[in-house]
Length: 158
Image 1 (cartoon, rainbow, N blue to C red):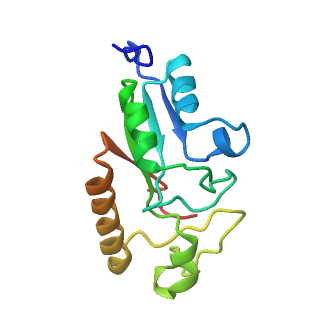
Image 2 (image 1 turned 90 degrees about the vertical axis):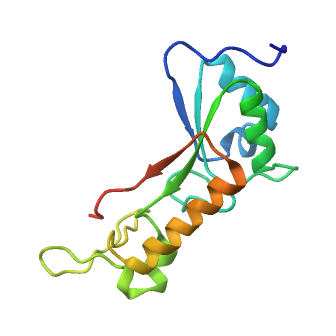
């Protein structure tokens, strides 16, 4: 092993690294962020990407400037023996909700879902949306060759 590599921990410790506070707020480089995850015993890192970015929420998810590159960050994590999981938000899609009335979920009471706070859920049975989402996930897998996919917001909205 090189000095930057270490064996993954015996137990699985994962972290959601959706936001970019490590760079935007704390000023860490990609290499320093990867090293910090290793030093904390993190073996699995759940990341977002520029191809299928997670919608905004309570976490600042603006990609950092200064030469940040999705592929390079993943390579740094893998070089350090970490497992990388691409994250996708399945039924939380504010843009889709705004653009297509048919994507808005309807409850058993017949009422259309009303967004609350930052959460905007969409219909889990909309075939148009599901086909596009499946294509996007396939593109992510092809581009980044992740160790796995972490699916978030898979519950029925509301």
